[in-house]
Image (cartoon, rainbow, N blue to C red; front, side):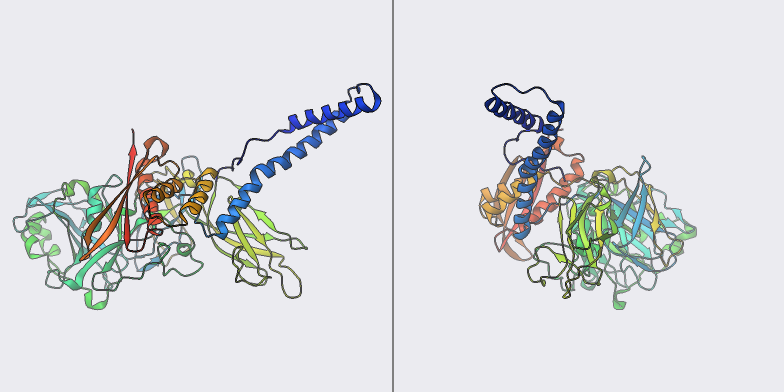
Length: 579
């Protein structure tokens, strides 16, 4: 976070204070002895040293004190804070020989061009499995075109090819075939590379049903999957016939994440690559179907496969059919490749440090690693000497002797726990989540290649498929003041156009124009009211406009939705103007 600026006009510096002290001394000496004092270098040095101390007190009163008061007010009122944005990429795991679940607690190491070691962690949990993508193609305009990513026997990639597919008309469709183990596609992470951020094909895939074909190669209701956005913007597929999980009122993802986990401590908003990753749900035994190629595509698939391999592709496999919405165009061109055992990973690191208290139990303030370039994302836990967990400073229900912590300006303030005997903890152990912000950007594909920790897949390897993007520092101090004024003006509710305007501008001060267009639309068989909010900002204000626009849209939409009137939905469109 940038150093907070003054709330009022700038006060005098040490030089001005020292000069005024000298003038006052000269006037007092003249009045007492009726003559001007001689120049005394020792006295001048003493006055300057005192002026420096006085100026420091003035500066503290001008800058730090108002900032701390504002911070305390926002903390007590539950005003959400805007955190730093971690850089994001897509990683894939290879050389797997067994199933294994990995999640945000796994640490991945990458090396920047400057020689810095940066830590990344998966945004969501996936199951690594020795699954093979046997066939991948797009049927479009009655042509079946091979998509990169599938392999022939012996691990040979499919050559690019296209054949007529007269039996499959209508809108475009993606067709995938997997050779999976007995657990099927449960937990499998899939990266569908659609190129540029915000590609329309990626949005179309998210809106489309993913259909797991039955043993007869036909799609039925029991095999339909739908996508919901989760941590990092990853699309989590869910069974259509299963009950949807109850959404958390604060809009955070991974509501079922256990306390003390990275997913529960910090919500990673939609990143630039989240729209390209899909994760399959657990597949119950009654849905672990295998079939021959779908009848509509069978002849075209057979003509694509060399004669020696025809029997190989016609054996029972796990087939997935994804019909895209009508009007989708250039789908085969947009999909540049498909990779298995893939997941998005963000530049978030778990940091552990032991903090020692003095004998009188004084409050300790510390910055993790003493590095202002590293940003605090969340607190996993603070545990004292006696093994008790410390609580946040604003927790009113905790006993008076409980240990407390507070995050402020990237620092952690610790109040040691005091036992019934009057003795205070001598130390506390902190587990924090840190990110490098913009320093995590720019790692080229292949730069992340090391797994920290042990896996059951002892031969497992990891590599990032995309360059890292989207990392940014938290907003400057002026944004916090504006967000506090938003809280007072709107009382955390958006009802009028003016409410939308001040709330959006407070969320991101770079927004210049906010337009609200209330409409009604039919969704899920019912009429609902929707507020279309269009925000405009200068493109030049963003280091990575495409990635930042995705995060701004997702974050602002959830920010407004939590404050919208009951029964109204909010949809945000971001328009970055200029070149």
